[in-house]
Image 1 (cartoon, rainbow, N blue to C red):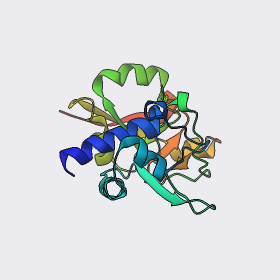
Image 2 (image 1 turned 90 degrees about the vertical axis):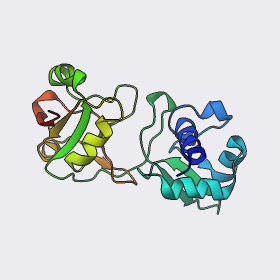
Image 3 (image 1 turned 120 degrees about the horizontal axis):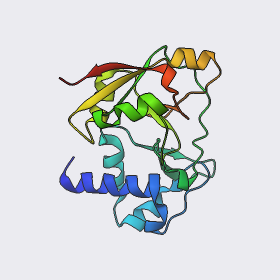
Image 4 (image 1 turned 90 degrees about the horizontal axis):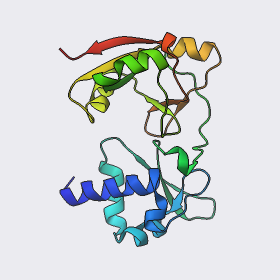
Length: 185
């Protein structure tokens, strides 16, 4: 993606995940907004939007045609709590083990308190160590990757959801279901 497309992707993420009001938009209960409204609000073209959606390395956005024939767009996950979006995802049986990458400075707090969504609606989990490490490195090169006993949690009644782009979501992970899987040297 070009620098302009990266900027546009970041702006779309801000609007569709955290602050729709900055573009004069209101998301519906499931996080959708008409594509035409987003295009107008952000001053872009449909070709630009389609390029960003198609080429985003994390498949952050989903586009769907509603029952009324109107194309809509939403962020696949990562919404702030204050936005109050329900992605309307069905519960899904997770793999036995999932992973979460985070800067090493968070290690002690996470081992005490577990993984919590903080300002987001869900904790995000990856299916492999490499992806978790990449996610953790967005904030620091010194990363710890946690193994999450997701199968055990699901067996105990905890709910998991799989977003449109394959990210696993849950409301929290208690410390007893965490172990350090991998750290940087």
